[in-house]
Image 1: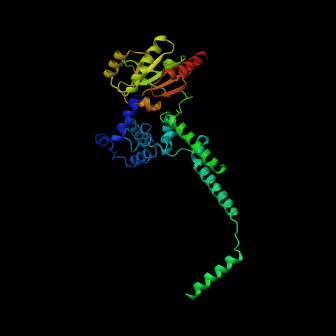
Image 2: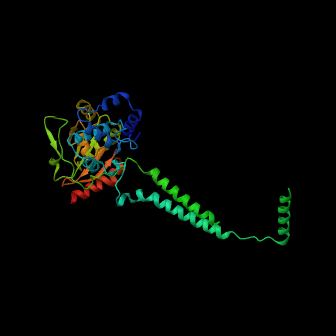
Image 3: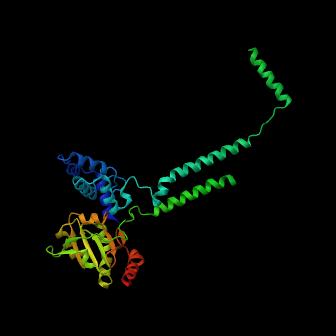
Length: 157
Length: 175
């Protein structure tokens, strides 16, 4: 029962109500450049209500408000960076799908490579160890004779 | 025996991460506004829309800003707590009625009780954006200088009140 309204918002995000869509997809035809900027930016920004959707994909109320906000900033001629900074100042780095590289996000950026590196070393060490553990097993005289016989048979056939 | 030890340790570490992950609330996104001045606003009051209320009016006091709406279900959960907090007169609570209609908000307060010193109306959600509101209810603790000291997303609970908000307000009031 907790966070009921958040869940409700989430449900609305998922339902993708067609009427809402019809309402918010109105492009500003008089300014195609600004509209392209809005589209480009809203694809890079996260909707904080539906956390795995971009602002472009989301139909949450907040996402539409934010798109409207971006649209107005774009119409004023603000740069991409200025608009993203505006949102980051309010919602934190989490709004960006591409978080900046800094001390708190170091693990996020380098973690996968560190794991790959550790796995690579593990594999190398294991292979090395296995190679060393292979012991040559020399054939005795009897076995050598058998091998010769078999090879001779092969030649005859 | 030794060759099983390493995979077992790795497995246990992963289980540990999963367990911690399951107990984290993905909604708890750290707010960049904590430690920064609370965004300024001047909004009409719910009880009297002719009058505006501004955050500046609260300078010199430690106060709570509680973002709520009559359409918000989780707000009902925390409302009784706010009402009893208000009765103690311990800290003033300013309500921000977020993207709501005046009639419904007034009705809501009439039913559940009004814990707010003042309620302001953010009808279009603009001030909400400045505060980084993304899930109602949200509660901000703002100090005497107007700096945001703490933000809670989601309903406040007895636990969060007792363990975080009240001690923090006491500390800030003593400053």
